[in-house]
Image: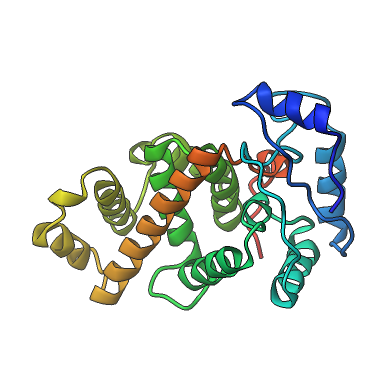
Length: 245
């Protein structure tokens, strides 16, 4: 994996939190024409507050390990489908066991069949991340809410204050539970679970809400502890209000 010069990396990292080595995106792979165009636009954007976010991904000096065959294929799939590899994957790529466990858990919670829609799971991710003020997850998953909903304002409301959004009774109950579990988990008792049941959630759904909220509380803390930076391309995604097919 190509690395930027030590001086450039050190200086960029010091401007944020202190010395660090960059983890850089692996080159190559195929992407759709819109994804390639978005990637070119992001790559050519001048300076700005996020100028080094695609080169200095964390504040930790962790050398990337050789990708396992499964993870090499997964990174290639990301390039083909998204046009880029999410920085969180590169941040975990110093240890294949950790990377593979992270990918497996993420895919199970966020993409596998569930009584919760993919949009609902992403809304939980952003509401939890908003409470925790996690830069990485707010940028990355705020973009996904915009994509899945086709409603840029909903993505912004999830980031800033989900209570200001015009939500369904089901959505509000789900997010209230997820945020209470985040902020005051010791106060979650049977009345909180019963509110979810009355809003139409099954007991399996309640487990899934809790699991997604718990996962993002973990990832928020790892991202904050390491100063993990989101791909710059996320900032401009799905701002026009077109729903993802």
